[in-house]
Length: 479
Image (cartoon, rainbow, N blue to C red; front, side, top):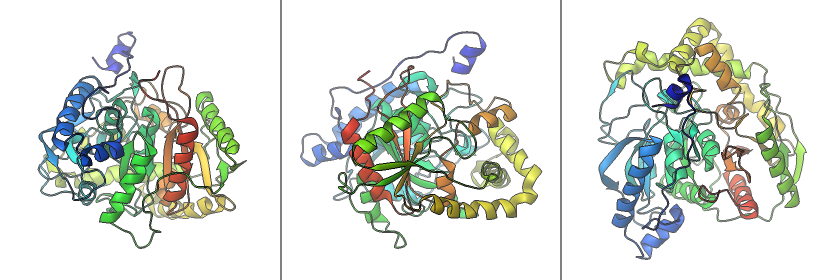
């Protein structure tokens, strides 16, 4: 029975904590540690793949995070790859040769991909072993991985709550300990949102830092970028360094391997409430202000900042979202047989209808969205980093953001939740979600977000290393 069904029948949804850490080949190791153990011969890649597959089966039975599981893991022991032998998953909106790409949608029957997507090749270049593909909400539009039909992806910290979206399947598996790192991508917060919900590190890179996303580069404004979610800062840093060996964007400063904090003290802007008017809830506000105090204690300067974006930004981004749904509906037959846009879920259909009603506004929408970079740059005058919440409130109960909720209510709820992340997608700047030091009374993580200038991943990672060392991140087994 799904949580929405339990709620409709007056029952309290199941609320349990799920993890699959155990004394096996993976142990408590993160991706960097596991790859090192494989290189030293302490465990073999085959043993790791076997034990990871067992963990995945146990986790997925309770979390419903996996879309496709490979019977035989696809091993890619790249010579010298930083993650050689490390098990992982690819998100099911990205092609992996021989596997269907379903995009979380029931509107079509997907065909097996003929070749790997560009980012898949970049991910494989790090040496990972792919165990399958993870679930996402339809076309990645929702900040919660839920469906009109079928079970939602559950949050391993509290299975009655959302794991976030759109990379919810990846985040659930990593947080539960099934794999140490997994593919995620971000078109409005889809790396950072599930990282915040599941207590993970989620770095959205600068536009162009990783191989351009196949879908994103076809858009008028490319808002999509690929990366990973991980349990440690060093895993996210090691992934970007390894990925850069496969694809180096000459327009961005070289990143290399970031291995720890910097001695440099930063000027940090504090943004607690969203420019779109959504007020941050008390638990999130407390987590962000506590983080600011910790940073001041470490010698950084923290001052309030305003992000004076166009007051029409939220409406414009919603129209742009609608354009994406409209384009999918118009070109869906390229994805698979018998595509029927009428079978898209309620959120996708509502977004499409919103765009159809406002399509004449498209030139102005695009012009204003492109100008957001000017307001973003102005906010950074005299600053190195901006600290903010990831989300305006903590992870909601499953059902709150289900696509079967009437569209007007659903979109109001989404806009009151996803109030901080889209700006970085429009501007193309890097942003990282980190777990706050404390949990909610329901035992859920809270994410805090650091955003930087274009190409400033090194600054964000150095600060993340420092905060991780100072406060640590709550562990799913520790509470």
